[in-house]
Image 1 (cartoon, rainbow over the protein chains, first blue to last red):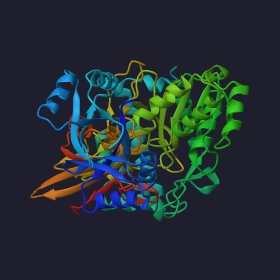
Image 2 (cartoon, each protein chain N blue to C red):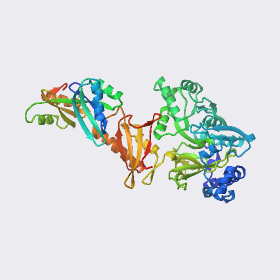
Image 3 (cartoon, rainbow over the protein chains, first blue to last red):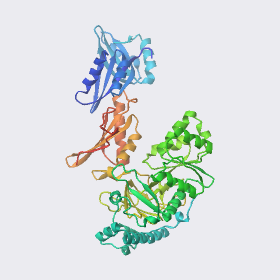
Image 4 (cartoon, chains in turn brown, yellow):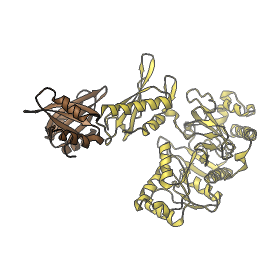
Length: 138
Length: 431
């Protein structure tokens, strides 16, 4: 989908060393990790990654028996002024935002936003109409 | 169609027949077989002490091990000159169990299997495609002679050669399919390669399936795949083979042919009888078998029995489709739990696989049950809420259906310990 970016979600059991196993597999496969977000929920967690070659990342993890899913998300550049996040949230209005996390690169800050997949297209259009800057990658 | 008047006899008549035949069976085994004589004597019981149906409880149990211990013919009660047929279990765990039939027994078997066919709507106009394996296993020949008994045309296809079997089914116009449910599903899957309207090439109207544990989901799948009525048959070689009970057109419970088999439900741990409707181990006494009569055989199968009237008019009691094996039973805070029941709940849950493990442990004085379930590879979700929901739904289903309070833990695919390729189902840390 134009305007959306593919994010890789990884199911992780909450046990010692498991996160390292996943990062190791990706490092060995020379997959670059652009952003990493770990959500924990008791005995399991979800690792959300923005990576270089996402198809390779998914395949290599699945070969190692790790459950993954590719989800479309929107990356929005954060302008360095007060109220910019408020404006984006306002633009999205009634849409169901499922989660948000922030990411940084050398020059810019951004946040990754996930809305209901049914509303994805509408969200992207609304954001663009309101001149919110969407990024293709981070 | 109801094959025999015995199937619609009033309750009192059924029980009068059972008492008379039980007395006769007890007399015979006591007089003829040293194994039974010894067991009766140890309990201080004589065949004359049997005066009512309830008195069967005074008799000793017979177990699979007893048949193995007297391998091959030690429990037979007729001279070998009278025995006309031998069947045997596969014996994957030690010596096989061997069973024998005399001419009279073959007639009994033909009779009960004829009832099975009639229950499935078959008569002499039908063509029965028999996909049960022929050989030492009782399935093939049991279904074969039953079909001949009702005068149907039987095609002795046996197992394997799927494409060839489908060709025969099409060309001969088979109307009744007899085979294991998994093979029936396999046949349908292969047949469907010819196109989604493949059923028009077949004339099947009913199937008689059994010989393996079957979930409700699989039954529905088989019935839907072929567009036919599913009749479930139950039996075991130690008792006679297929033909102990079968489901009619109105109910998914199986009518037990009570004039030939006396069924009890007991608590598998204590051996005490359980009331109608309660689940426990099925114990069967043969009432008319001569070559190998069996007293109170512990089937190891878990089911319940009801004597409530059935719409079909048959008065024979009905048993539930087998819900599990007594050997697998766990008692958790006083509640009996069978892995198959847990499996049934998991099978109906989305986002998880059928690879699960039940872990029983102690927390203080109480038992606690944890169920590990592998998430499926393809429906892995991105939302913690969705995953938590899967967990909570399974927990709620376990509580509502099995009355057990278990915590469910979602684990990664392939992470549950495997033994011979199958996930290890039960880990009891209380032992």
